[in-house]
Length: 215
Image 1 (spheres, rainbow, N blue to C red):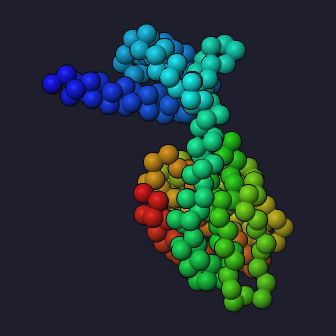
Image 2 (cartoon, helix red, strand yellow; image 1 turned 180 degrees about the horizontal axis):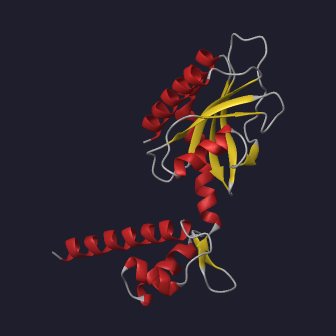
């Protein structure tokens, strides 16, 4: 019975620690210990214990004002996860690039920007956009970023843009929804104007397939 009780306490502590990480991640200005305690429904002493353990692993830190913020350890885990995300998305991206005859990409949010995590070029076209893995852009510009913002607002439909990131380039993208902890979009970019209805359906299908592969 004692072993079972300790196991239950450990699971509860782990659950609270993970909930605390999510709370801090969702608070751009950070959280005070009191705010964290109120949201978790526990005492300040319990939060201090959680913060101590998470800070020791680099997952949380306290800024100059004592507010809780994510630590560099979270970025380390995120970088380790990125190759797995890219690998899971590649089959759908290859299919999308061949269908649309355009460069397909998976874009994720990092540091308030959109970052191209995986890029696949079509095999049969004479010309296509050279879009590099690791390319960054503001979320407010380009179809990929705008699709992520639309996903935040609960919109799942495709987004089309023209010339926002590169003159003469056209983009169509849709958010990847339903994957916990992931903000991303999948889309295509081309040098010729795209049929928003046809390519939009292809992009939506790819977004659904990628969400299923990563869930």
